[in-house]
Amino acid sequence: MSAAPRTIRFTLNGSAVEATFPPHLSLIELLREQFDLFGARESCGQGLCGCCTVLVDGNAVSSCLYLAAFADGAEILTVEHLARDGRLDPVQQAFIEAGAFQCGFCTPGFVLMTKQLLDDHPDPTDDQIGHYLSGNLCRCGTYPEIIAAVLDASHCLTVSL
Image 1 (cartoon, rainbow, N blue to C red):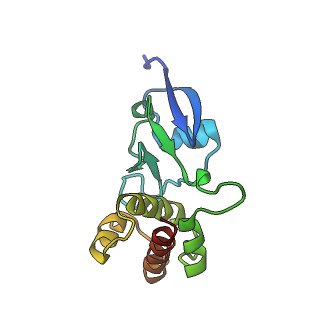
Image 2: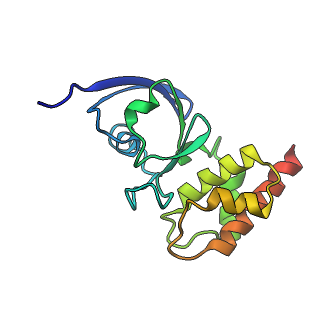
């Protein structure tokens, strides 16, 4: 006998939403299947690579391991919500200007992790950057460009403060 579907309400990219799903569904599956949000990508399925990163109440989580039921009442932010009024978020713009991607598969996770880093530490140290990004893997090896993008974004944010 299978468990009854679960219904939750939460804020997704600034809008109140409701979803009904089987209780075993992960957050990444919910975002992709019911909301057509494909920025977060499942790669390792074990929470080790960072490709599936989304922000839940301002904290980065591996959405491949995070049960969708835990999102009840939460505020979820995906990479799709960062651009506003036709303008990229400063973090997204910095990644483009620094060439901090090759295939782009890991980029949404790095962008959201960088957003959390800069929300927590607008002028991060090298150690803070290393700590925050340590859970994200880039198989193309663009780490120097990613670090440059983080620093560029932090400079943009501290200038605008």
